[in-house]
Image (tube, rainbow, N blue to C red):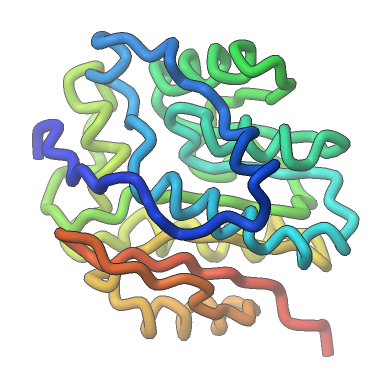
Length: 234
């Protein structure tokens, strides 16, 4: 798959508060060259942000000190979280060096502090984490995920999740279960083609209570936002 991004449009899902909507980070600094290597914020990005914003009454009650966004891409989500939770330590993670550079610029452009770290999922990120956010590569495609990431295939790594779109997600779930704090919350994007019911069942096998928080149909696919918390220790 060569830069064949499914281009979802902007979400119409209502946000929790107009004041929060007004704090949407700018990414006007994105150039044509950036677009060749970095995933442009799209429907999945905005739906994820809207879902987190709409869940603010819940997350506001938690002691959220550490937030990690995996697969940060443009850094818009991580920057938005730094604005929404100004007292939290926010970290943006990616394996794409072009994305990491752009995410740093996004945080700077929006006058926020975000730590930007190169890591394959959570390999270089110690726990505990109070909020974990992941917009994974979920597009089903036989793209070889074992090859080296280059400037020519960087977008493919941001989009493609193997034949069923689950290769990266399935690696991530057990890492997330180990990294989350006792009261931690995971927000995960998937599409119906990934087998959402089976995915939630698999997450439960790793100690999560997982629910589909948002399901939204678009022209090409149905996006879902899964919210998961760790089950209480018995």
